[in-house]
Image (tube, rainbow, N blue to C red; front, side):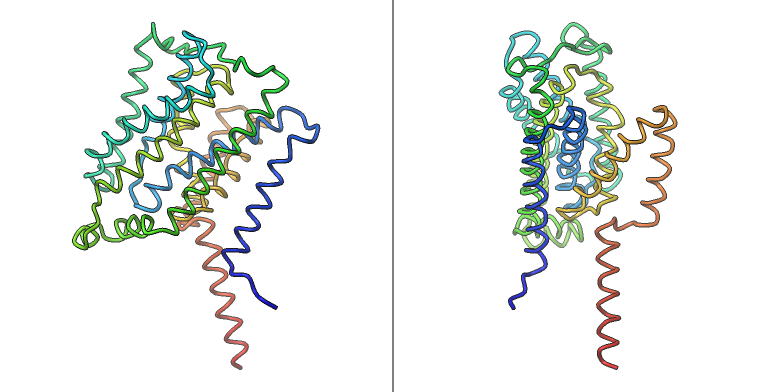
Length: 326
């Protein structure tokens, strides 16, 4: 009997899971189920977007929220002032985020290590303060409200946003898989392992990193644009808060950076756990318990869950071969 390669079996399993998720709206499930899963799908997109630079290239960026917020506010302002559909303007916000990311990347991606990380955090904080200060345009700390998609009735919204975020998640997973199994991915991994050596071999490191940074910003801008309409409001805490700044990074680290599947696993575990805990305990204690447990897991599993299970499987195979040779 012909054996399928391991990657093909894994890909088939993921395809079956996605197909099952796609047909879920055909069943009469409560709206809150679709809303919970839609948020989880969004975090998969954010974790995958971080992974393209933070995982494959090894540049840990805390600037994801900067581009997420641009998408969210662009869609919100155009819907409030001109009545434009968020399902169209989300692409405009994504393009603005992508152009900004390209410009920022050309300068900041020349930095390395903690210098780059702190610079991207500064960009996020700066944009958050800017949107807070432009009160006439953004509503300041109050934000912008009543951002319902006019094409949808309240009854249609949960399933519709669920399917939109599902499609975006599939796109981000496919992009990660293509990067990981392409020359682009090899060049990014070469930069991660030894950037000077990669440059000496002809890799245009800054240009390459900026391009991937811009692509990640596009996906983040689309996600932000959809999310503002999904919530029907946006403010600086939603667009530039801790959840959007740090959580996607932690999700990718927990699942396993530098793999296409790691951010998916990390996002599902962390976000579903976070949402479940929010029903049980107050938000302040929720963050304390959630953060403490996460720190322990990351310390115990520095390579993420993917790395842990890969090491475990290697050990089992070595043990099995040793027993066969006796």
